[in-house]
Amino acid sequence: MHLVLGTLALVLLVAENAAAQQMNPGVWFSSPSPNGTSADARFEVETGPTGTMLLWAPFGKSPVSWGPVVLAQDGSITFQWAANPPLSCTLRRSDDRNYQGVCHGSGQIELRLTLSRNQSSNGLELPVSETDFQILARARNILSGPSVWNRHDERYCDNAAKQNSWSLFCALYRASFAVEGKYVHLRPVMEEVRAAVSEVNGRTLNHQLMDYNNLESTQYADIKTVFEQSEKRLRTRKACAELPSSKWTVDGRFESNPKRAAAPQSGDVPSWGEGLNYTWEKKTYRLREVLGPMANSGEIPDDWLAASTSVVRRSWNHNHIDGMDLKGKLSNGNQWRYFSLCGESWSYYDVPTEAAVFFDRVIDGAYSDGGHR
Image (cartoon, rainbow, N blue to C red; front, side, top):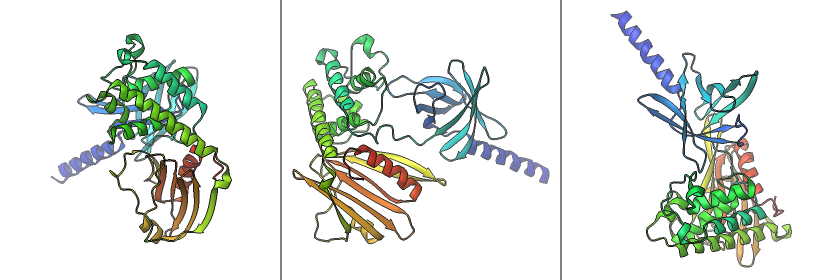
């Protein structure tokens, strides 16, 4: 009886360990991409009756199955990378969100690979450039009239060119390749179009571009308005970033002021939000980006200020548009930051130095022409 129970316990333990090692369903990213097609390739992991499957699923393309993800007895996972020549990859879990290992191919090819639930900055760190205006102009040209407008978007653009039928997303996707040779999901033009949709629509949707494109109430005239508003937002943001650094003033220690205006609450104004995760020592931290009206600036939460041992503020004002950049330190040594300028705000709270450095690089990069660092 004891032997049976012991065997059963061992079987359950092995099954539990196997489940803990297997990839979780959802979206994963690789870095670098072994076949060199992009810096970070996007995948979807699905589980079903036949086991765990890996699908190659870059933005804008229909997912393609690359076959099973096999869990070995030693806890490693193996799968085939559909490159030319194909690669056989063996990875081990380094933490809850990451696998690391090596892919082998013919001719003694050996490439190190990381599969992660953490998405890269993917363009959030880019300042507005002429490329953004060129992509927007090309997208407007592609989606030139009601006759070429696809009102039933699925965010798969594989056949759009053949059918000459373009959704709002696929027009921007196609324009990105035409102008830059690649699609960058969170570069400024894509973010400002999402924010413009929020302004025109007055609310936030799950998939901002696809869902707005597919609404029965959306007309082609609304799509034109989104393009026009997006260009205004890009020009305003670019002008903000290019103003001389003398527009920034350092105020030093910043105290909570109960008389100052309350921060805008969600629902007060239309806005669009994105974010990035950063995992350090098995804990994940979040950088939030919110885009709202270009003349709107939020306020730092009072409880952040009250919990801080030190706070330094820089403020900015031009043409009735306020900006601020506050950094604080908490009693546990962790940091926070709130940056707001031209309708865009960035914030993180209670993060270690390693995460703060990564998040600051993204924030400062987005306004790298502003001289505000």
